[in-house]
Length: 217
Image 1 (cartoon, rainbow, N blue to C red):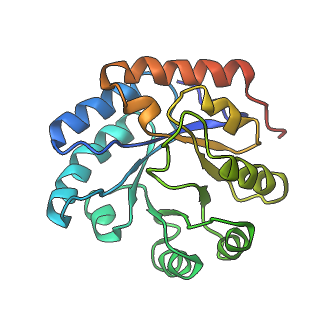
Image 2: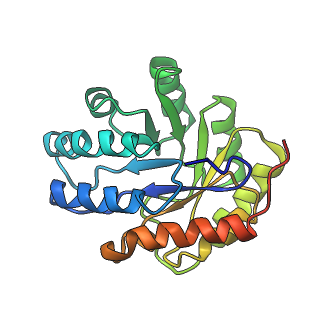
């Protein structure tokens, strides 16, 4: 599968599914739908031991599909599950500590960038990416206007890639792409109806192939 390097790419956020086998099957199916740059695995309400078991099922199948597996929040789980990286939603200081400790062995990104000031603070510690929105912030069909505005501002002036949280409508991926953001994150848009997950991934990729702006080399 050739990667569409010159346009916005899809990042999946795993849905909150208590059964690890069921969750793994749904994620594996979704990844058959087409290009996915990375998959973020949140802990949700799971205790550490259960989260570890989920991560150990998910990481190899994500990597097997050619995507990067990013564990949200827990560096020990990321290490034990042999994930590619760590997604943190803390402040610049927390990111800085994680980068010092785990980069470049692990991808380290995220950040709680609710405004320009905090985004710039996060940028100063040089994460691998910055994330605009919350992992479970897809509560409306469209992407949050504030996150779109932050993504557009960031992408226009800073080289560190950004991921912008989309909405529950797969078409919201295009609004994110039009900001110039390198990545669009989708959760319920893909996993809301698990049986449709592969076709939604295919649909989002087709939409981005056709209409997303191209990055200049």
